[in-house]
Image 1: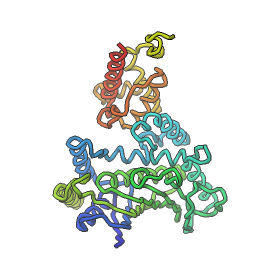
Image 2 (image 1 turned 60 degrees about the vertical axis):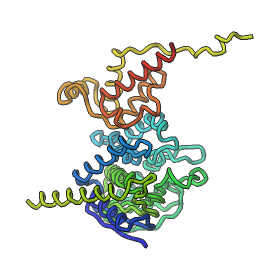
Image 3 (image 1 turned 30 degrees about the vertical axis):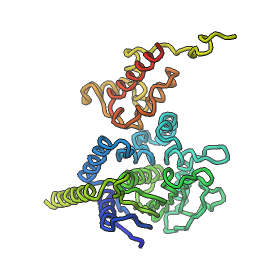
Image 4 (image 1 turned 90 degrees about the vertical axis):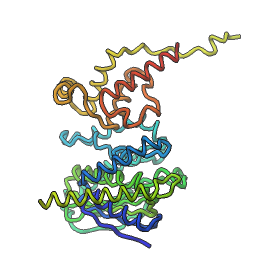
Length: 283
Length: 108
């Protein structure tokens, strides 16, 4: 039942996973998608999916399909992170995203994933998990801890203070027990795990439910940017992104889905774009 | 017994915002988001931007938030916050202008 997909960049990995799901013709459990270069995309595949989503937004507003950039922003608002600010870049990101919150909450009543990362609700306080994770990785690197040393973390508490400092892994929980009681909807992303191996930072993300047209591509983009941020701030190299979908849905059904014919056309167009891109590179 | 007028009176309204005031405030706020001076941003807009500039929806949310704090009133409702309605500086200005006008008409 489980399946593993491997792709060089976000677009190709998404496309192969999407094809796998369409061939199955239904939702499946335990789909693992690994993206070797999570900051890279195929611009033509991205444009095709952007166009498909824009058409859906125009023709079926009730379907609540969001642009890829909007989905990605819920995980990491890259426009607010300005690396040229150097040591002040992360403080600027946190300040600006904090300002945006009062407005974004009007659309995302339960908050966004990024909000969970920088303002995790704990004992009436907001914990900035990202800041703590960056600090821990920086500290590990400063002590020369860049060797393979990956450990499992299964505790849904952000950056537990009793976690030994010499572990080169970190966890970013999203799901808040006792608060997130909906069977569907936010948060579908439950947990993020990071591993520092030979100075390269790798990410694993767990989704309890993954809609492959509405969300998956934007999620991969957002997670890749989040990984890029943490790597940049901690002086690490960007590694690979693995995204595990406990439940992956191709969204074929005609209710809230998009229909098999429309999705097959989208798939064919994306494959043609991929082939053209390969030929262009070869030329 | 309080009069009907007293019972339904609206809270004291914030001072009116003119379109002339709104434009520079939006540029100031976006410059703050982009960590540049308003002059640098104006130069970009008037140069390569041809009088407008593309915005990320997250940038627009911060700009709205800064303006709401400045003017002490809500400038965008949930239905205004569709990404296509705030993907450029001019689109955001129109969005806020429209909301301000509809608010003032409602108050009349």
